[in-house]
Amino acid sequence: MKVTVLAGGVGGARFLKGLRHHLRQAMPDGAGGTTAKITAVVNTGDDMWLTGLRVCPDLDSVMYALAGVNDESRGWGRSGETERVSAELTAYGVGWPWFTLGDLDIGTHITRSHLLRTGLALSHVTRQLASRWDIGIELLPMSDEEVETQVVLDGPTADVPEVVHFEEWWVRYRAQRPAREFIQAGLTEAAPAPGVLTAISAADVVVLAPSNPVVSVGTIMNVPGIREGIQTTPAPVVGISPIISGAAVRGMAEACLAAVGVRTGADAVALHYGARSEGGVLDAWLIDSADARLSDPIARAGVHPVVVPLWMNDVQTSANLAAAVLDAASTLSAAKS
Ligand code: GDP
Ligand code: CA
Image (cartoon, rainbow, N blue to C red):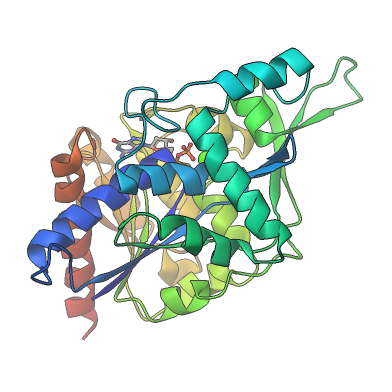
């Protein structure tokens, strides 16, 4: 059993933790792990160089969560953090004072930057970082090339737009300044990281995690070759709505959807992804029980709707969601054969 998941940071991490938990119980290997192979293809469009360090927010959110060393209450970074280094950087007037990196987290960024500077590719470096913990999931960056999501905002004068890094818009401006559009610098020259296309083509199920559809999953699928890989894989493709009752769960995905002209609704996001039978990427789409009435428009668009609880409040609710994803995939596979 091979499961490949396209994931952003927090939503992706919660789902992956649940998936791992479910598979360890449903397909145990007798040593606390699972015989199933889970591969996560993670968004790197939020990455940046900051005070000489390569920061990969989504890869780190996923790695820390799977290692069990993340800060659950804050939602990002390491648990038990201190911020002494960040305070020094601010005193020197470098870095982004509104983007605080914890000391333990900076340890990760120093290691990553060091390894990248020795000439290793990000995919290799990511494997090396993750090998410190027994996370039981293969983490792949979407690409080894640097891709940067930027946001075009209205500038001080209407005809001169201001372009900022995605994290500046997200963290500094809390996505409150309307985004005119997103630019993904470097994307057209980027290639999928080694292993990504095989993980998609050889999977038994491909999952679009309940991550941001525009700047997480959307960015991954915009890497040349990845969308085509999903459209042509023999595996069923199952997506999970990050939207419940017309609102993003934990986050500000509404502002991203608005920028690309998509209504914040579980049905609208499904239509945005599109049915594979119609040139899109989805075979099935999981929506929350509160959105059951949206099954009809989703089915009419050619996507198989599945209604289940979508709130991932702890590892058990996330595992139940993962089980529903695998159920939907086997229903689709059975219908095909
Ligand atoms: P980021 O990179 O850290 O912003 O995280 P992601 O892109 O992986 O995920 C952000 C999205 O996860 C948000 O837009 C939320 O709508 C979604 N999300 C977070 N928690 C939950 C949950 O419990 N259930 C569902 N269905 N979606 C969630
Ligand atoms: Ca992110």
